[in-house]
Length: 299
Image (cartoon, rainbow, N blue to C red; front, side):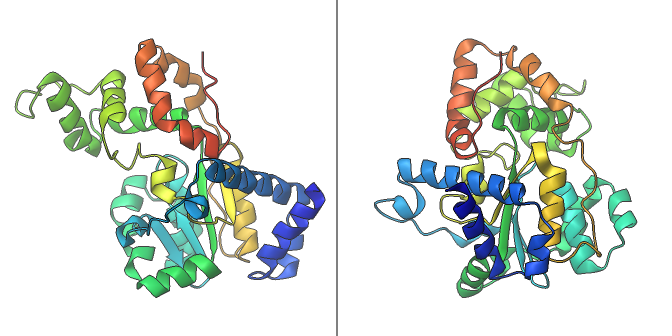
């Protein structure tokens, strides 16, 4: 049965890509990607989301602002912060803006996000028909990691560092909301605590993009992704996507730390929360966990 599913998965990709490109990728990778897709479909069906919803909700065009398009290689990438997005933007710059690989890898991520990324083409710029065409005909992919690992990574990167630009936006908001500290009062470089971030995550209607749910960022119940990459296997998944589009001679995905160091710190940060906060935090990301087969396995 699994062999049939894998062949069906390959046949689906064959419609858009040349057979020699598909042959260069191990069958077990296709099998794993098919399992990830089937799990998403199963969860969406159980929760009556996407095509299984009693009443389909049309996605607002603004929700495609974090989708990046390469019309040359026919790919659409849904950006998820803290899951290799800086490196995917580097890849896009090489593929679509003739940036050299070594230059892209040397470029500081602040410049990648706040300067060069403005030159990349976002799906939101197209007409409704243009968006629909690309979602139907291009290779679509997204990357995820354990939701709580991503939250800890986001906190360490954006809010624990007193010099990060996020201190002027979300950091400022959290200090004012939970400690009544204004910019004028904060001369000592005070930063928000992890508990304050979690209180915000639990209560906010719509989260900052660095902490927003995968379901809200990439809409996997509504968009049938061709590849679901994971941070734990990011180097392999990224390399195979690049092979699928026939761009291996043009670009390679910059080496990552894989699961990185954050896994080691997750328990440390979760222990700063009380039981109610930990429970409510996981409730916020429980659906994401189900979609991508992550559980609450921290102690």
